[in-house]
Image 1 (tube, helix red, strand yellow):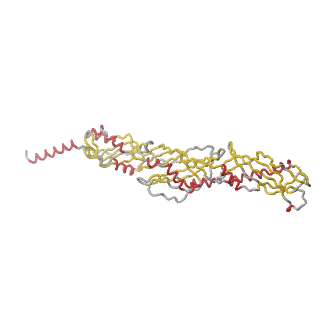
Image 2 (cartoon, rainbow, N blue to C red):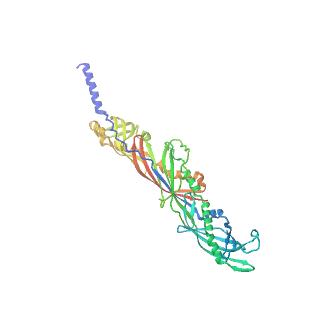
Image 3 (cartoon, rainbow, N blue to C red):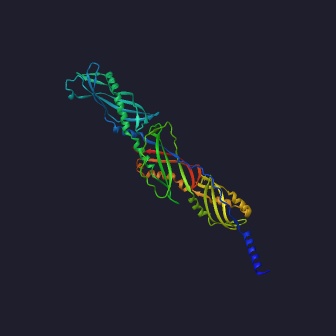
Length: 464
């Protein structure tokens, strides 16, 4: 056998040994499937209670309510005499709440000028006609212009000083005349009470602070990059007012959309103005915050680079080194491409379903399996890979943590609220917090995760 023949046999032997020791896999990439439509911006709702103390409202009303409830006017008596009367408040108005109504009580004094006196009217001396303790009752609601509204009505009164006048040295009881006078003037007194309530508390001042503050960007994570929430409110509604012996509560619900933004703090050029108030018969008592999180494939591949690439997997039929790995989307599934070397060289394709784990707040790739074309090539070359734990290793590595970004939401919202000026007079508390995944959509450039955040929020006015 000549030397050339020996060389050819040697090369052939090496080639055969190479084929036996290193299997090459070069399947075609999976056929690209159509994607589902993207998730539209969801609407979130912040539900809370605007609560204030009755004593604070009482102080506001007394401050704005004039001492003179009915200025001096002329009232014609039954015999043609001209009574000049005025009604004054001689003490503070007191408020109590019961059965969805407010009750006002106030001490009043009625003054008169002697109708048959001989002095000129401008020199007539005013005298006390009577004094009484008056009680009013009224429903209470929030008007469309963000003011408390009442419709006060006389309920009853008690005389604390019987209506009497002194004429020609005689004291004459004129109770019926006084009752007639009060009956004609009670509408003016009721209107004065309602105006004091209307002017005493402007809810738009308090709600407006919350409305403006909720529009500020909230940073919820710094690593691996700044993640910001951008709420944009567009409507606000109230339910019927309720209360107890100490406080009155206005249920609120703010509707808004929220987006996430990566990178430096976003600049908000203009803030949405407080809109016209909407009224609802019932409002839920929990906040519904729906966050549309977007995880780009670049972020997923960054995680893979730390956890999967350059790993050597010692399997039953040999070892496999993962040289590179990347994830992309196809239809409703995620596709993982892994370039490997070692006992098997070439490219492996896996597919799996995205899943959000509420316990660990992680995005996972589950039900991982080889692509069909990859399976066919492995059957022909290295079928032992199909029966080994490579798929489990890939699935365990496909975990994208989101817990850090989402678990701090309540603290971030409270902190942002407390740092604003509204925190000086108003307190906000988030009592419960629960994350519920709604939908996961695979898109060409990443994965959309719609997460529902359930919580209860309270807004309490510390002082008016």
